[in-house]
Length: 413
Length: 91
Image (spheres, rainbow over the protein chains, first blue to last red):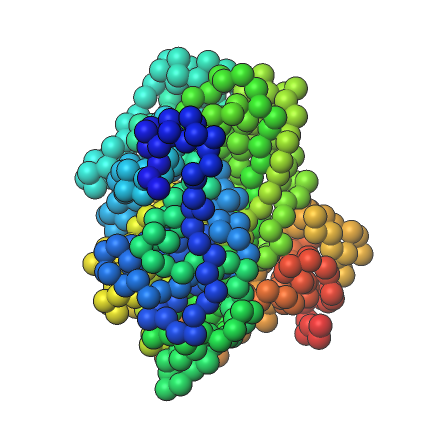
């Protein structure tokens, strides 16, 4: 059943008894043309585009827990595309463009709110950096502008303008904003299921059976599944999965923490980051303040937070918005992100002939879900990378062709 | 929160007083001229990333300033072994 105003009215008048399950829970079949591992946003998007763009419908998606229970449900729901290298700009702006029409494509409200993404400018060096970045973005055809301190104060009335990090202006991407994160996973899942994809939850991959350098079958907690092609979209667990398949990745796994306050009256209708404190903050439609900082710098698969980070993030949030000082924290969590040496993703072929990967998005995976899935689907279907994914192959490390966004865009991952 | 007892100064240091130095016991190719591109790539970029026991190096940067080695579980964050830098980890 389509979600629209007529069905909503009809169901409302008839006791809401006609709503169907959004997706099936099928038993795994013994064989599929392709299997996607990982039921987060990237894996679900891969399944959807594989079925929609490439007509492959005898496919399965395996998820060890529940859909969107990893980083897709553990992020701060931000989207933006102000990256600097042309290769990155092409992929991250495609992400934003796909997100802009995704609600319609999937017939699922993802609650995209392009409320404007502001990076504060707190000193002369940041001002020069912001000008540099604005020029780069213009060359790449991506929007972004520098606004003055007066306009920043007008846009965000509660912001402390002359605190420890005096605000001199901001870099603003108006198309940036937030999305309801679970809706992205659920929307892709429902749309993929409608196209015939088997989405199998509570199904952990335990090992791979190889023959002649290829994966012949996957051993799972719900039995053995034969397949011709495998796609990996498991973010922080990519290293562990690669080890099972017999290769190594230039990826390290770290915790990225975030937290949310109790709901308060609406006062902040933009997303704002302060480079001085390293903390970014936005207010949800329910009124909660969502806050995040930098990742934990040591290896971890812990999926939980700790007090030093809470203290840093909360004190920084209060420094930015002193009015939050009496607000209580409600929840706090961590996801495991996959960090690469150049802060850019790894897309395409792995050393195993029929296995393809989508990983290394680090702390920025949520905003890249649509093209991440699109690129992995292309790799699986065509057995060759999409032209936009080609610069992000695993071989770039040996060829010394890094796409160093860590240095270029100054992102913290 | 990670708390390590520095094997040099003997003090308990929590993660705010420590600096993480990544995987321990990586050896730079001993014959740089002979090393293949693959070997250099491996040395520069590829790291062991286990879900379990990890051998790593930490610096007592808020204290005595010495680097030392630690075996730690990357899921539970349990500290399994701490040794001075000249020793090899056994855990």
